[in-house]
Length: 298
Picture 1 (cartoon, rainbow, N blue to C red):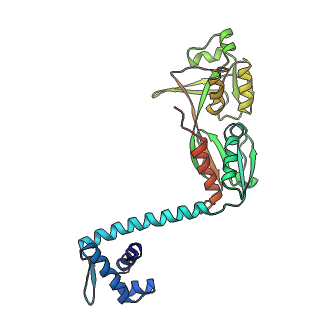
Picture 2 (picture 1 turned 60 degrees about the horizontal axis):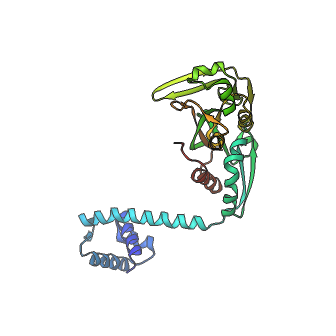
Picture 3 (picture 1 turned 180 degrees about the horizontal axis):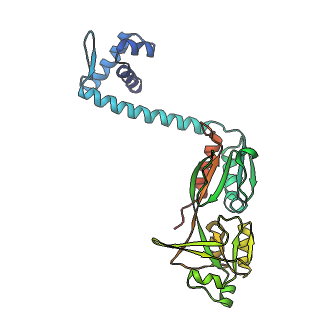
């Protein structure tokens, strides 16, 4: 007896509440269907369906078997769809937009792996720290690093967190001293990211307490990699995203400040034009970035 085939037949009988209608759906005779269900009951050693000339009803065992059969068949069908989808070739052009520093630091080592996995797919990557119009520019997906996204007609999902690091070069701190509290930043040379939501204001938190410090930056730039280089050169104190700052901190070229307080956290959002069904190439890229490229900071 084909267990899956018989399980599907049983489910159809229950759904249609009729052997005759279920047999029509399954393109078999009512007698053949009745024989299948009888074999199933014999295999289980219990009655599943009580049948009369005019009606049918499930026994308690039949109700339990129906519920579990629906669950198992659903999982089996989902498994088959997943495996089938994984073997299908993804092709065509995928147009991606991302911030320059994120693209060079995070995406650069990942894209070769992604393209090797899907050799029939073409990728067109546009790196720009400005927020570009996804629809007008024809992007399939745009990656944006923001505290939150404004309401719009676009669809979006969060892929992971990016923690800001307040840091400075050892040479700068040796010459000017390390600030012990965020309020002391106003007496230091500060460098800021000009495209931030609030370039002259840095946020800090410690537990439930929060603090906002207003600054007059000595230097601003619209790219985090430029800010990194200026900080490493000893020009002052700045706020960098963790994916830019952490390698420099690990190498000793930058020193993190205020260990007891956290600077603000940003989300990496995948933004794409609203469609009823997300294109498979976009979904695969989004999942790949989430799984391989982002880690929630400690």
